[in-house]
Amino acid sequence: MAEHTIVSPNKEVDVIIVGGGLTGCLLAFLLLQKNQMVFLIDKGQENASSSIAAGIINPVTGNQFIKSWNIDVFLPKAIETYQQIEKKLNIKIVFQQNIVRHLPGAGAENHWESRKLDPGYEKYICDQADVSCFLDEVNLSGNYAEVTRSARIDISLFIKTFKNNLLQEGLAWNEKFVFEDVILADNLVQYQGIRAKNIIFCEGFSAVNNPFFVDLPFALTRGYATTLRLENSKIDKMFKDDLFLVPTGKDHFWVGGGYENIKNPEIPPSDDVQDSKIDKLLCREYRIVEKKHAIRPTTKTRRPFMLQHKLHPNMFLLNGMGTKGTSMAPFFTQKLADYICGESKGFPSENDATIFF
View (cartoon, rainbow, N blue to C red):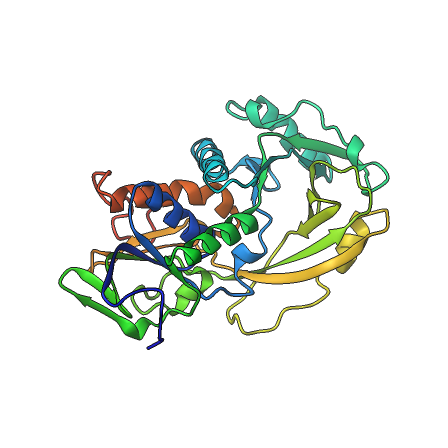
């Protein structure tokens, strides 16, 4: 057992949260707003998906330009939550940026034009795409579409700021969670001197090794991200072709997109997987600042897991947000926070890892 000096023996809290990525930090933030005492335990992983995510909220996705699942509900909740975080933490993390998408052929153009006529799409679609900010910087050819009400959320700044605050207040440990140290007794969870009413696991892809929630249908994927510097760039929108090009401020850009299915997270990634695509995307000089890769806790159902343990009703798991975590996580963390605080009638997922709302 690790030695700690911040938390006194037998400290009592309402909720222990295991995992300090986007989901864990959002959940902790929302519970604190409900006057719940939380304690976050997270070692942090270099290849965790939250550590490299661009934080894109994209309401219209895929080759056929379909509205993202439940986006009409998720989007307003996401923006409301992130703006609340901005106010509470005194940081700027919400950046409204349209997405310009390349239409690679007649099929894509037809799909896009048909979407303009579909009810419920009009608020997410621009009549004409304006590509002027990409001239002389991005290789442009053919036709383009423009999505509006999209946004970039600075996930990294939120997580860093919020976790630092928790650490300073003695409400977090920056260390690996030891499952063997969990004691379940008297309707409480005990862990290394902490007694809690509830424990919630939000540990990303590491959940495949969680002994309390086993055999969940994860389908892990590895994503790649490259940070570029484009001197004196005038690009102020996101651009989507084979890769996503996302302005992040001060002439820096996040470049990513695509993924590879993996069965073993220990298998080393490829170093140059995006290089040729970046050369194809840009028609100007650029400098590579950093390359990263991360493992996403994607699920086979493409839906997140919100689970309550069948034998231990004060033990929960919230995971599997996948590529759309920035838009989905505020909704699901709010639902779980409401349930923990007794503000909802019943647990949403009925303990079934294939049914979600």
